[in-house]
Length: 118
Image 1 (cartoon, one colour):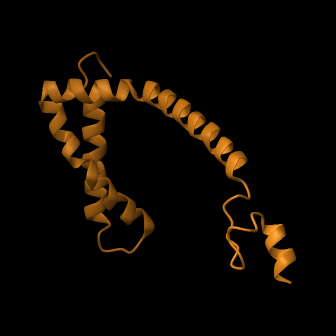
Image 2: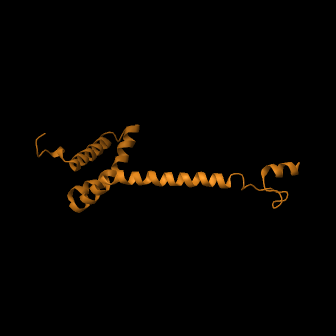
Image 3: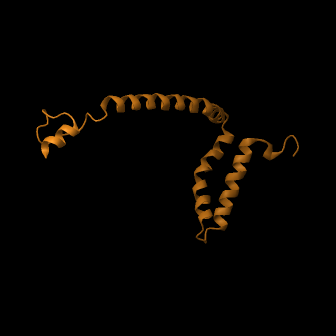
């Protein structure tokens, strides 16, 4: 592969992959195989071929791909915060949200309700 080779640029590699996946889908269209369904699913990538010809869109997609690791780090922090609040909620409300059908305002715990119902 020399310096100006077609497959040296990543957008051309994506384009090459999409074209060959489409060709494989057309060749294997008469068979009922699992791999054919995967090739059909790869049709979703076809609009990405337009990005290669639009430099502004190329810049936006490149920025999104480069920021994925930072977005993933933020998602981890948010998940940890949700986990902390979930643990606090379970500790605060654990066993307090039960319903007693005998006298719901008189018996507050499940054990009191079971003792007085029998």
